Length: 177
Image 1 (tube, rainbow, N blue to C red):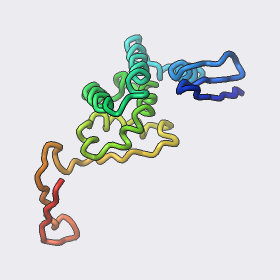
Image 2 (tube, helix red, strand yellow):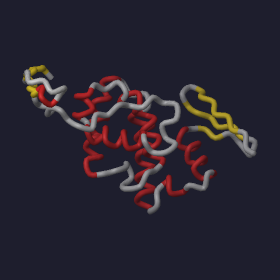
Image 3 (tube, rainbow, N blue to C red):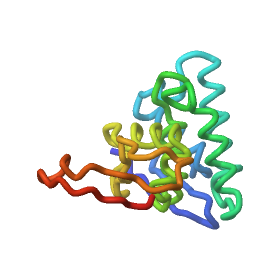
Image 4 (cartoon, helix red, strand yellow):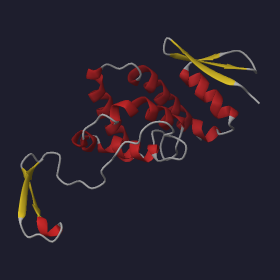
């Protein structure tokens, strides 16, 4: 049995085990753990997918970790654009990149208003998919994602609902979005 201890020193994780020298760094540690778990598919299947996984792991470390509040909009915009025609970050297969990016942006997504989640609908779709992937979310609170849009994000006028849809009443309500 392997005893593993991860210690964060100055925001850099260190993995101590009984089987060798300490490993330093998020990507180094997670890649090692994926290999130890005999789950090579999490690192990408083809050479191209492996490169994409490494690219997104690097993006997580260089752009997401420690980003300033004013950089969050750019990160969300870039991710939203990239995920427009993709299921996962490295194509159509769930990888380590999805897991680490999920953990990296969870604190951002959890604080987004509904309208912001809709504005970044590709990120929201991807995030919701990943948070429901078996074994990913663990201790983090789930992020509520509304699946039915009630109004368009560009609509700032009133929203009229016929109350007959609700509780059989015939009166009309006008609400502002």
